[in-house]
Length: 426
Ligand SMILES: Cc1ncc(C[n+]2csc(CCOP(=O)(O)OP(=O)(O)O)c2C)c(N)n1
Ligand SMILES: [Mg+2]
Image 1: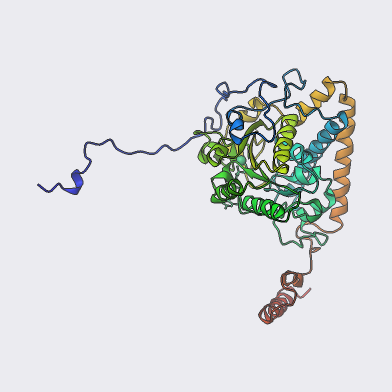
Image 2 (image 1 turned 180 degrees about the vertical axis):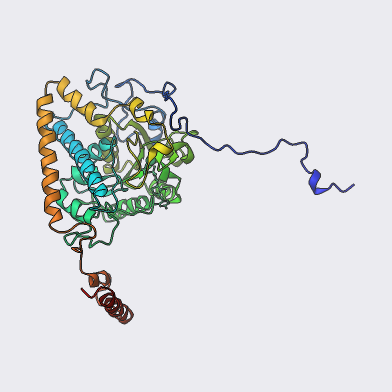
């Protein structure tokens, strides 16, 4: 007897899919009690040149240095000088001050877009301070802290955000998508994860040339779902490229929670195991742990021991950007209850606990940095803000790509300029 198609598998269970849902929606009480937060100082620190597999227990652990008593603990303590710690605190405070002022500038109509990194400052600042200045940074859009930790002038950043006539990128990039060759900071792309194959490529080129510079890339946890993330790791693993991949797990990708990128199944650090490269999972709100892990991975890459994938476990304290309202998709209590605290408050408390800082000094620092940002903002406004006409001249949009403008672009430019003169004779 011929079995009819419709009968096939009639007794088998129905297939179904699992669609991850975040634990807390707006109005929900937040309970983080199932989150495993190991004690500071309890994680072993293998040698930088160890076998990749020696790091695999650390992919499911969490490297922590700062304890609840605000002291540094264990083998991952980077033993930085008080001056170095104060520098990191100052950089992180400047990032937060800058973010707050630029956010307000967007609300005042001075720019079309801004994006903060509140709560994640350590993952860019302390990591950058652990690299050599010559090492190439391949950032995503939430790494303003890398530029600030490389002492890039904030005036240049404001000019870029305002797309004004002093914007070195001539208004050709979305506000905040910086590019800073002088800071060894690669051009930011809005297309998620493209910076990672570029980081691997730079690292490979550096090795091929016999150079000593390494590459460090940053990517959001949501963006690890992109194919580019996996291509970058494959190439890096195959050729043992001197590159560090920093995955910033801030739990959210706009309104998608980390489960949508696979966080319910495995940690992001554990992706390293599948590629056979070193992996570390780190408390991203602990500036000392961030510094120590990045330094470990950089030293590993520098000694030809291979690439490292680091997951920095943190929390996106505010909305995705000025175009987002997180109140409509997540509980407002998440941030208040976040058990890993605030990176700036934790480092400040540490410096006070070891007698190297005070509340008064901190107030003075905050005031000084705020004045610095205000002054840069005032200076930048002389060069123009959104819609005030002080941007780069229209014709410049046809420049800088070809050494000699091809005839068809010359014609297009001529036509565009003519049409513009008809539309806006002034
Ligand atoms: C290839 C691509 N897909 C989608 C987007 C739209 N998009 C911009 S940011 C974002 C969320 C990324 O989240 P995550 O990687 O976690 O970084 P975070 O914003 O949390 O720092 C998305 C989906 C994009 N810019 N590029
Ligand atoms: Mg994210």
